[in-house]
Amino acid sequence: MDYGYGIKMNSDSAHPIYVTQPDLPPLDEFIPYLQQIWQSKRLTNSGPFHDRFEALLCDYLNVEHISLFANGTLALVTALQALRITGEVITTPYTFVASSHALLWNGITPVFVDVEPDTFNLDPEKIEAAITSQTTAIMPVHCYGSPCGVERIEAIADIYGLRVLYDAAHAFGVKHNGQSLLNYGDMSVLSFHATKVFNTFEGGAIVCPDKKTKQRIDYLKNFGFADEVTVIAAGINGKMSEFNAALGVLQLQYIDKALAKRKQIDNDYREWLKAVQGIKCGLATPQNYAYFPILVEPDYPLTRDALYQKLKDHRVYVRRYFYPLVSSFPMYRGLLSSRPENLPVAVELAQKVICLPIYPDLSRDEIEFIVSLIASF
Ligand SMILES: *Cc1c(COP(=O)(O)O)cnc(C)c1O
Image (cartoon, rainbow, N blue to C red; front, side, top):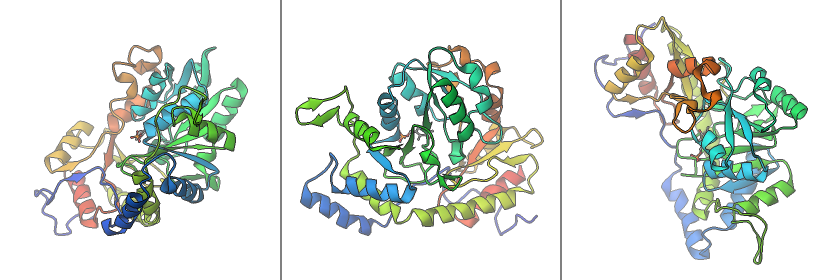
């Protein structure tokens, strides 16, 4: 394979390349939205953009009910409240810390269960052994947008009477068996953070199956107010502002184009990395191309961390998502379930993984440059 393409192998990229770069609509198209907000003086509390964005998102994602949030973490914290989850929750250590932090903020004990090597997701076969009399729910993560074993998880939840809350922060637009992946489980939580496939600067949402549940979530994200004089629960302020909602409305017009570009980048990486010994593409069939994880195997000439550092030296700032494992952070490592011998697959993946840059504006030259660097060490 020819990695020439006129790239000087020892040169650095003309500018730093980060693991992601947020996709933004043309600014001049956003100005009229801002003018509307300035005219209406409606800044938050379920304003016109908020309600429009909610309806448009339901359509786009093919789900029945969505409640918008200021960010994904508040949505997670609130979803746990709305489902009245307590005690112990079975979850994955191979994720962003917000997943488990949301449990701790609710006084819930996370119980870590190992993941599958091919999907990076909670291994359904290992869930049952972790269930105790305190277990009330399973909180899996669709890691990198790759669907969890939702049917198997549902079957286990049914047998043991457990709730299922999906952290779907990576799974915007992902489908499963011809329908939205977000329709599985009791609820799914999305994030629209700047680094995610679909962003509203900051933002998040809960997807739920029925109107009554959505109503409860809507109360909870607004301090628990049901009306001017009625407070039904100790709610929080989790509301999405009109600014973020207006941006979301505009971003939806561009998301399909962005996904198509990501797909092309994924294809290019896959094609060009085939020839590089010791590098394995992490996801077999990605859907929303949110991340491009590779595994640095023992037959690659460098260790994972040496490759990470070398790329950095050439101003390619890749990330080791998800290293370190959540279970190894100080607030979790004392738990029995955090012991590395309980999580051998997650431990190994966390040692091997690198997420390569992927975002709509990443050019072919830049992809070739990154691959040529990986191939040259
Ligand atoms: C980004 C992310 C979150 C948190 O979302 P925010 O909108 O940043 O609060 C939660 N879980 C996972 C897996 C994430 O990647």
